[in-house]
Image (spheres, rainbow, N blue to C red):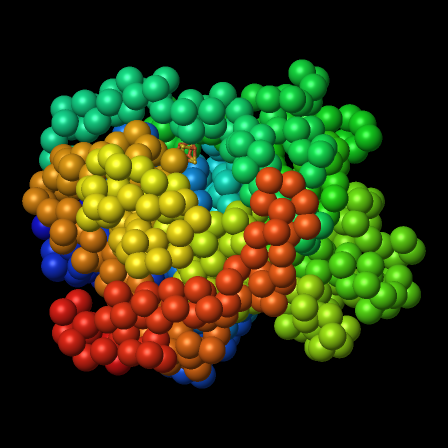
Length: 622
Ligand code: SF4
């Protein structure tokens, strides 16, 4: 066994309260790397076409990666994978914080959880000790209050807590899991999976260490990031302002979702950028384990809404989906909505998409205030958003319907409202607009978890003749708005790379294309951490393997190429700003999709061909 990982997986069955240790050989680690690579493997092995995501048979895998745990920037996120109650397919989410490194220091490479506890419970892991304990003193409590209870019991030093909130307990299908308050496994409904297992939290306390192959090499890599931050435009911006500091650039490029993705611009956009926040609104930020960037910023306010700085502040995506996309440009109102989502444990992105769907349906006269239960519901009304989050978090009134996602809402309000529902596979869109970024039009449709802006690099990469593109085998530059073969190649190769980052749980802000580190330095990271000589080719193969496994899982569960589609709104022209008139061209989109399947070695219906399965060593998965 190499260094850098422990060789031990912790398997817990909540139904009978048992746990045991499992181990895998080195090839397993090389092939699947960690995170969703591990998690998708277990789902393929242990679930079937009919496994209900909210049943005891669903399998949660909580896993960092083989390179997690050192004090190198951006190497210590953690992944969570399970069948998604939001989409019905693969659910996969990553979060920052310190859970991943602490889990490893406690002696475990991953935790695999099945079954359902008789009562609301939590798992406590302290090195080799594993306890399943009653959660009656935290059940129903907000994430912040529950965290206080855990801190009283276990302290703060060396302790990390991941927990679903009241929304997860109530099975809101896009409920999130909070990671140490400032981060969240926001996407694909992992909080509801926790709730369905009567699992409120997993607490890890560690006193051990992780042994690395080459600590001096890791120190050099850590220093490399620090020296490069000042010269890295994007990273130096988020170091200063967090992702809240990239609103200006996106709005000026016509890529800020406004009025339910009807335009990419609004004249008040600058108010939402952190560089313009009032001094009194700013609060101290934090960082993920060992990261020199520290992009996790917070805010605080007394009026017009009281906002605590104890939970993470709204990031760029949340600012868009709970702000500009709802025609709300008061950053304090956005921060309040974000705080409430973090209090209940709700994914801000899908929740925001559902609110904007409602607002536009009301505007078009398809839904009435009476049907919602709120007078004056619509765009530009922060009080209405705040009210609705409470309704969803408590599953009260209309919130009980909306808690089940877009399709449940469309079923309730009528098929004619579908044209305002902006989602793929039930997964709401982030800020980045497919009308403006053609590669995202493709990726939002084909990514197995649904519309996701973090699964590949965005279109700028095709314009960049540098090591960032060449190192991925993208040799021909092209126009940023191109939709041809070069663009598909860029999307595919960068998707392989980002799939590697997700499995290893590396942060894209540090390790993404053209960011702080180079591709050869990723090979160094693996070698310095584990001692394994993995070439970039082998790593990219592992990235492709994970994508194919996720695809196989979705196919098994009834997804087809027909689900790789975009909402109708994406084909309508944007009405204002620098991107005015832009839309997704249907013919281009269909051609790109067919090419994408070809690149991946899938047939015309998106099913991996036998040769591809053999190449990736995945015949077992069919
Ligand atoms: S760049 Fe930000 S999100 Fe990424 S690891 Fe560092 S602090 Fe965490």
